[in-house]
Amino acid sequence: MRRVWMLVAWMGFSGCGPSAEPPPNVVLISIDTLRHDFVGFGGAPEGTTPTLDRLARQGVVFANALSTAS
Image 1: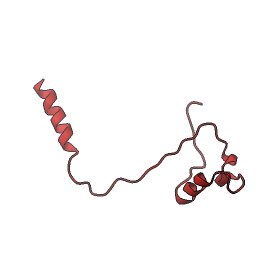
Image 2: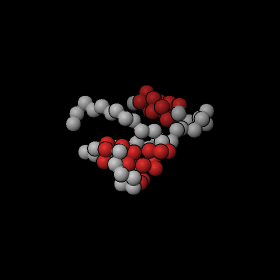
Image 3: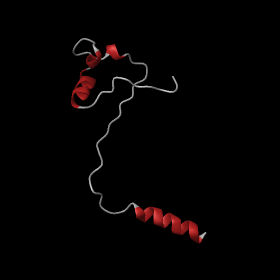
């Protein structure tokens, strides 16, 4: 039992301390059953999805996404 507590303490303290750089800001937006051509940045008329269009302009859009399940 003592070894378990020593392992838990080591794991808890090993991640402490200042990091070299701040972590990146990542926001993943995943929408189910939405066609690419139904959003503004995918070809729909301007103003259809203004918030998604703004996020697409300011961020990164992946054109191809694969899934192992439907």
